Length: 543
Image 1: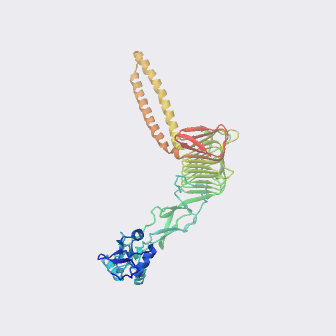
Image 2 (image 1 turned 90 degrees about the horizontal axis):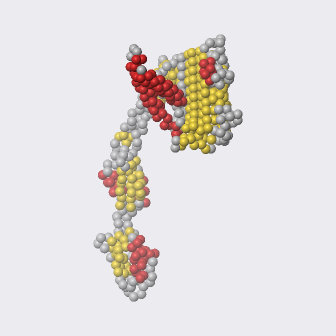
Image 3 (image 1 turned 60 degrees about the vertical axis):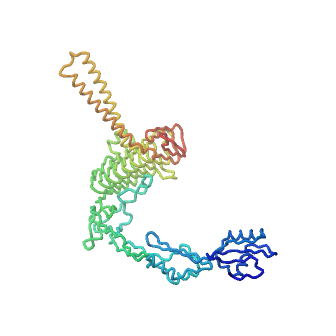
């Protein structure tokens, strides 16, 4: 026990368990104390470096000030310094958490060193000077004391295009399933021997090491070769990692390689040139004249205008000018005389009137579509959002996901049909099946009348006519059932209609008929900006 001065009626001592006790022995007069005064007494009695319980200190002050009886209270203790070293599950990091000593033995460098050795931590340790600095501080929370070195993976074989602005063969689709085909680019041509793509060899990775000294091996790099689909391209004879063009043509970027589509360039297509058919890309610098036919296995580029001609491509069709059909012809005669554009990719043109356009992905028209039959499996875009040009007047526009135009219809009330949310081909199939069912049902009625007549007049049954009629009726019944099953299957494909929409940026005129899925809405007055969607099975429109 430490000696107490006479004026300190309140004294402090450590018991056998290193608990700090406050002892008050009344001696007559006393003064009011607060926590600060208690700490001063502790300092005079050389006990201020012990751990103190703040709540117990407050309780001591209250008891002392409010009672004249003697008491003994536990208010703290002597504590040695403590620490713990945690190791991450992946054995890559160790953290030190340390509490200071309160009158007891502090944590030493040897304590830390022994603990690290027990845990097997031998790599990635901080320096001795850094550990000493933490010990001097006396406390730490999740201090990184060891950090492993992760393995560094090598680079896989890389493919670097050497042709600027090369088109990729696959369309780029956004998260809504809509592709942006507004900017289709221009025709890029390469000559025989032009470099197309460089393949860089894979690089080796770098070993790592965890804090236990275990070596970490990086994942092996992939030595991916060029694809085997390299039509129109070849390897450099002196460098198998350099791809060259084998022909004059259009380079097309494909996964792990480049293929070159053979390309022919002609000034224009007319009676002099004759119809064109080519298993590659056709680049037409000028116009395609009326009645001509052009077929390309890949893309068709037209630098001028297409006049009532027929174009078909396995890729995209890009027309810098416009499309002009036969304004004095019916839809059927327009198709028979030309005026038909079809491709498996996208179609783009400045304007179009009196033609049929069918695209496997999208139709993009810069200025206006007048009395056309437009069919696209993805979207139809006429004009640019916020622009003044972009009209759909008359005819029809059918697309699965999106139809967007600045204005639809005309002040004259020209009938204009807009359809989204249906596969255009599915609708054609449904219409055909409906006609087949109606025809078979009519034939059924006729056969039933014949059967009834013969049953009522058995003498008229010659050469097994009744049996033949009954077999024909059975066949018609089977055929109708098959058509009805096909009809139900096609109708099931229309479930994506709820994701489709029709966007009118500025004006929707009287005479426009809108269809989304199986729902139909007709405009009987002019409207401003309108967006049509299918909500709860009904057409909803708003701005």
